[in-house]
Amino acid sequence: QVQLVESGGGLVQPGGSLRLSCAASGIIFSIYAMGWYRQTPGQQRELVAGITTGGYTNYADSVKGRFTISRDNAKKTVYLQMNSLKPEDTAVYYCTRGSYSGTDYSPGYWGRGTVVTVSS
Image (tube, rainbow, N blue to C red):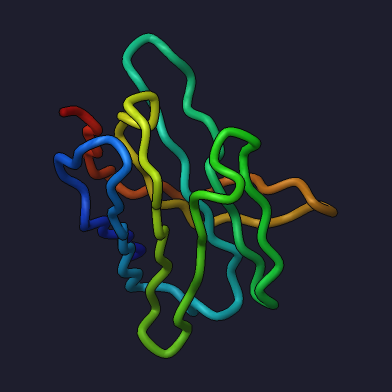
């Protein structure tokens, strides 16, 4: 059974940093692209960052230069390092297992999410 378990969310002040982790089980992690989405109340989920099996990454314009996605295939874990956080980054962040078509990432399986709140 596939499981994606996010951790690392919490409350942080503007300008601060957080690192989200997503531990995968029940899949051959190394053969899948992975991605992070986020959602705020009343809004659709948006792709924050994706990473291919080979390490190619893409980011939403709103987080470029501040967020970094990475993966550790030995640990079956994908990370999202978030720096210079802004109040508008407040959201539920979801880990996904997915695939790429060209440079476009599509999610196929979702974790349950972790809450990030950026506030003073």
